[in-house]
Length: 456
Ligand code: ADE
Image (cartoon, rainbow, N blue to C red; front, side, top):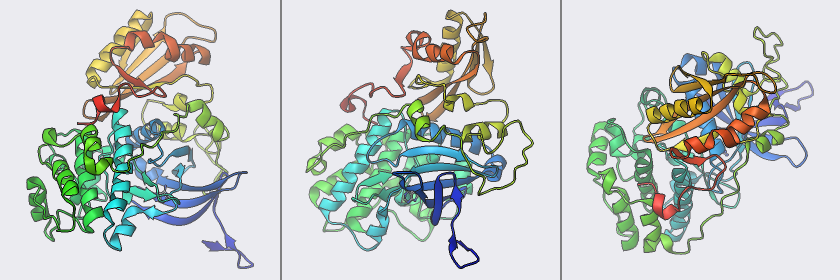
């Protein structure tokens, strides 16, 4: 931290946040501790992503947009919550809940946990992962760095969505020469022949449980290839202190064939898991409106990180939200409408139909509603009303993002016309026609009981 003339520490200020120490660092992002200076503020963690790197790296912009959409959909006591997204000319900042207890594995490094402690963390991990799977979201990168603890010792899963990065990014980034990270990855993911993200998550949960109970990794070798061989055969030793019930559960998680791997409802029925399990109560989903209210309009940056006032585009970096800035860097498709203040209705839904089917359905529904329909780049459908409404001609773009095998997230963006018309379009008009492909609208309660959906 820089020191001023009188030796006092000069802290970097980002809007209402005063940045503190570095908490963690990845290939594309750094996470800092920060203090919210507004009344009732408290601590937050801010992930800072370098926009130049985002621009340079194919697929990263899309990935960040997807990650933020996913984080907004996941509000659970055992998942690190997102507060807001800010941007400067050079960086995007994702403001998150701060997990004061740090990484769970800092504890394990000091020695294995008692079975009761390991169970408690595992119960919380499975509760969080199950909650996400029921919303069609798989983590795909469950590993020690992504399991944090809050001040009460509650587990918090972080970085949902990052694992959806294209394969080459993951191998060019954190994973490339490290044997440590693939140690948590399911064999079907390593084989690169396509995989079900939810089932792959459960393998990783099995590795995590093993590490908590044993204090070391199940699949380890100095030589990466040999470690992979062990993973492909699920070849591991079980130390004598692990109880029979815990062994049995691990053996059902670390199953090479994902189709035969235990599911979340099955895990929850095992005697080992059930002991003392109190299901956490998820907080109600936060609507985009509430989200924007919380962040003072969602558009701030005092430029302290980047004081240059010059701006070649039509948007000022001081008055743009992250989505406008990310969108302005990417070609053609502007998602900024998703986060603007006029938005009230949920504009996001998940679907289990293949992306191509979702796109066809959107086109059919658009036509049935009397819109001109055109397919855009990627999985996008643009719909434009044939006549002017209250405030010009309504135009909407729907973008379909495949976030996991067989799971799509669909986002509607308001391109033109009246905000209220757009709101009605999302809240009412479009819904009946889409009913047979919608799994859940953002903000709705889970579509089916956990026991039915599960994850496997
Ligand atoms: N490291 C990475 N993310 C964090 C968070 N949200 N809280 C604490 N430490 C972190």
